Amino acid sequence: MNELTLDKMRKMKLLGMYRAFKTNLETETGESYTPDEIITHLIDAEWDERQNRNIEYKIKNARFRYKAALEDLYYHEERNIDKNQMMRFADCSFIDKAECILITGSTGIGKSYIASALGYHACSMGYKVVYHNVPKLFSKLKMSKADGSYLKEVTKIERQHLLILDDFGLQPLDAQSRVVLMELMEDRHGKGALIITSQVPVSKWYDIIGEQTIADAILDRIIHNAHRLELKGESLRKKRQPDNELIN
Image: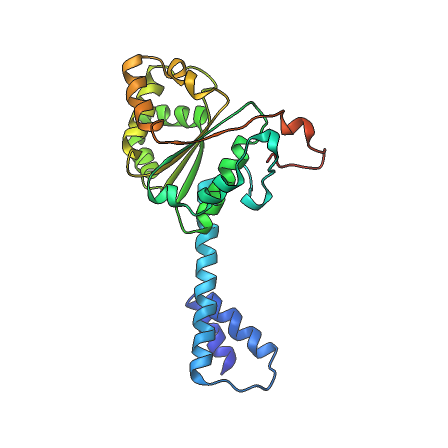
């Protein structure tokens, strides 16, 4: 009877219940449970299983650059990272309010890791997140315009609660990239949260975007009321040990 029940649970993909029931059979202690206790235990196990699978699915779809955690961030005075500010970001209220976080600083100082850590945490809180390297994203969207899949790609990004744009400003934008960026910012303004990392100070973003009218429109949607994290200090890549793969 128990084997038949387990088989039905597995076929119905009630994997949380399946594991909990199987474990209970294998570690039978002789204790008796009320029907209410048994049902509660099985439902809780299934709930936890589905929540964990949902988080794993969100993390996989986000395609983060680093496997990162807020708990592993390196807080040091010379880095200019306010731990209280990071803890405020961790409550994800900036996502609920569709706000922007701008992370700037020299190469190797940990901008991408911090952005990824915030993204990982948001996934664990149930938000949909997507990470994109800016040059690669612009190339992908330009190609999608040629093959007719542009609207599909943009709509996919628009559905995310948080969009992370990494390595913005590595090179000046051409006319097509300006239009793409303008459309992305227009879609997200007041509707979805945004994290942008850049080696270039925000004050020089006008020059990166080019075309003053479009630059004004884009930056008006990004900069005003944005949270800023301006990292300082030397590259962590130079400091890390050979066996340390993470830059935080």
